[in-house]
Length: 156
Image 1 (cartoon, rainbow, N blue to C red):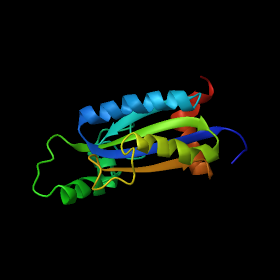
Image 2: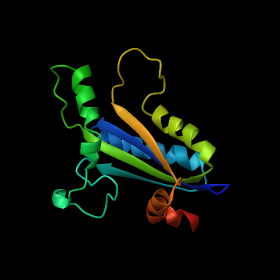
Image 3: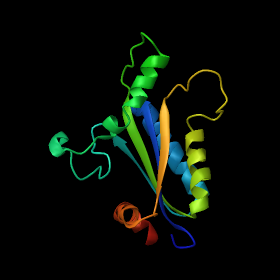
Image 4: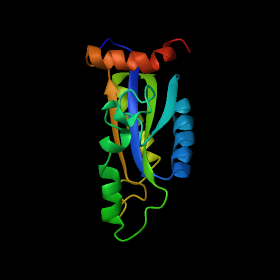
């Protein structure tokens, strides 16, 4: 990776209601606006193909969906809440493209997950099961992916 700020993607997946997810999206946008100069944050629903999420709504494409990739989150909720009805919960994935230094990715992702779990030492499970990951431009495939989705941030 070239030295200096570059395109990065932060991902936070949740098993939550649409209302909780929209609240997370709003808070994530505010947080990133205060931490990085350039960012773009979107939410993808459970039935969207995982990697190229807005290219197809067709579940017959053979692409893994967001819900399929993160099927552990509903399972976790059911284990932690035996016998309870999950209500309107579904799997969502928040994706945030940012221009940042590689060493900033970890702290930025930690800040995002802190919106869901401000005290990682709390007793019991988090009310909203979540997982987090990131993509940096470590090879041509990742660079192409980041450029495809977030290259517009370079022009902002």
